[in-house]
Image 1 (cartoon, one colour):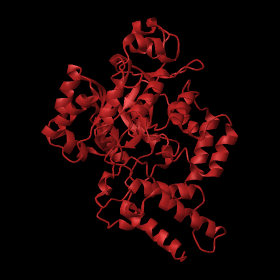
Image 2: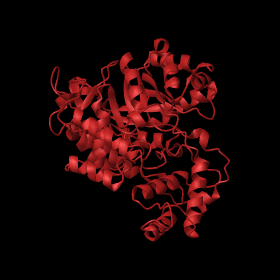
Image 3: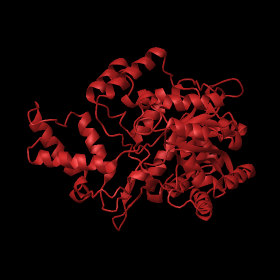
Image 4: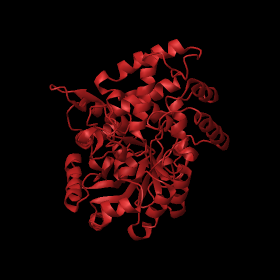
Length: 456
């Protein structure tokens, strides 16, 4: 398959019989016909080994409950030492995903320093256009002029090698003021409404990071703009314990349910933190379900809610993709006892002082070369592994000290470490989790210096 288009005959050979395609995309995805099978059910039950599908209640799309988030494609170095997308690895991941029923792919102009859309489009182009759904975003953060916004929209189609976008999002809204500035006052909403009317946008929605009040403000526009879907951050920690300015996911989902708007879920693993939980939490999850992975609990939680259309996962590695496909083929919804168990697990996890970084890299690049996500994620990893000491008198201090310092230098090159932060605050406005990044970097730097000097 490498570097070659896959024609319709080969596609059908790999995904099933020709009869599957006669009914359109839903059949390709594994529908059984009216009244039978997972894809025909809004609840999304499926027989063993089949991907679970949800039905878009606006257009009738049959969407895989597992969606591919294209923000974390594997990268390699080019001949000049620059990070570029590993197209061959991406092709392999997309091939496996499509062969196992995944049909929703979510990207954005700003992902991977602007490389994600092109890499995703190049790989998907090898398959029949009607066999998958593309989601991308209008990421006009730095320049919300009408001209730039329309150019970005059209560039997305060019990058994705398509003449229509299935799911188009206003990227990362938090309140009415930002919405009006970026999309209303410049006439972009009128433009997008016309594009939806013309069929070049099939579904129009937005992704949200913000407070209850900000979400309520956005919901007041539903009557005017008729949001087809909304992308929210939902996982078993954020359900009732969202951090920073973010509203609890329970509230967001309930408000969408009231209006019959389906959700697309981002950060089901909290940037990977729910697959790398403290060991005693992992033991707790494995004891309850020895056959399932730690991550599978989070994905089952996100998929259990019937108002969810698809759950996005940024699967960099094949083993992550395979595990998630297994979890959703089919989805076994959590029962009430399991939901209570996860709620208790979330309460336990609130005692661990991790930083709510989701590795989205919106804060990058840093003008001073600091690898912000790597620093924060390394700190979280050490917290979860019990390698962060509070005092020189702590039992195991020497072991924790050595483990942190050695792994820090391995994880983050010295010239990209927290000590280089001057507090310019440029990164803060881009963080969807509202992390005070300079404060956290300075805190980590002080901790490192205290470890080096044995002054804890």
